[in-house]
Image 1 (cartoon, rainbow, N blue to C red):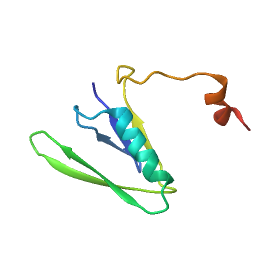
Image 2 (image 1 turned 90 degrees about the vertical axis):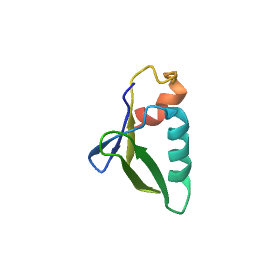
Image 3 (image 1 turned 135 degrees about the horizontal axis):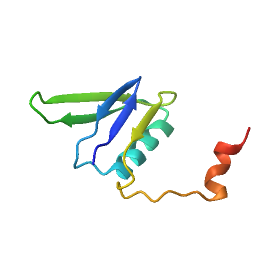
Length: 86
């Protein structure tokens, strides 16, 4: 599975052993907090890197993953109402 975080227009690979739903919940909790926090990802490869992303209110972050990440989409009216209000 390949998954990415979209942050400030950049795609950052999420390590393969990361549980995407847990990462999403952690980021959501940080976004809802008044203070800013850091998400740290250790990227493997021929040139290993450590990436630190600042997370907090007003900083947009997206997670892009395939459908096999264990997340069941919820397409009920209640879950979509936020997106359908205009």
